[in-house]
Length: 388
Ligand code: GLN
Image (cartoon, rainbow, N blue to C red):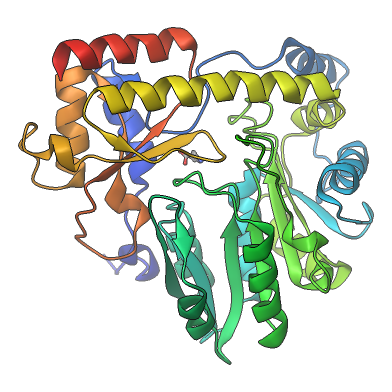
């Protein structure tokens, strides 16, 4: 048989999704993959059912139902301070995952470099490879996950085409400050570089942190592709409804790729998503309260059981140093640690190496997702105190 594609040989399957499969096969408490184990809001579930019953079951406009694009545009102006025309500047995609890949494919040519902050959400590695970009990594350092301005400055050069910014950040929980964002914006303008921002955790913030959208900064609207989705804010990660906001010129390229790759996101779920985006403020206040409690609860559970967690400022993840427990679990690498922790306690996590570029790296870090019911988190507390 002839050889299969070389490009797919260069990356592995997602470790995050693999951990969910392993956890399910062992009946574990899944704090690995970032999806809620509680119910999505009834209002939008009912809207989805209604849309199906109203026969909205055929293809939608390929780049998104007008109702949803209008709702995105209104929300972008009110929450993100981004002005965008729903007719020409928005593409609705199958989740933020598709939006990120199409964004890269829309702008990358062979030889182009992209800058990625490390640790990073594992999809960005394969996204870079599939789009043909050469990645350059800039390190974020615990406990606050700051980056060195000089190191970032050095990563920019004439080949740099784009920088990916994920704020609030997965897996670290870092929320990029206004000063950091302005510094990055300055470099993007100096080197004529696009910013691609993954803002999917924009409503999950702690300690009075504020979300800042790159496209709202001076001089950045035309060179930024802003990516988001309904997955995390409305607890519907399986709906696969996301979007990219960009200038008309960039959007016309994104739309072409999206059209031929997926045709469109699910029509009834687009209608329900449009309703979700119009939720009143108290929905977001409740979401914040719930995640604030979950963050503090899990952080204390981890501290009390020998982990050295880094307190997140946003998102629903806690990355923790596990070196104090390394010998106790007789771990040989990050994956081995997560596997043994799962076997011993039934709690699934994501091993740290999957957020780093270097092959074979041992970070002695793991990531916990706390978008889980209080009942689940209480069970984790019980299991850790019994088994660790
Ligand atoms: N963003 C989530 C995580 O990091 C899930 C991503 C996914 O599996 N599509 O766990």
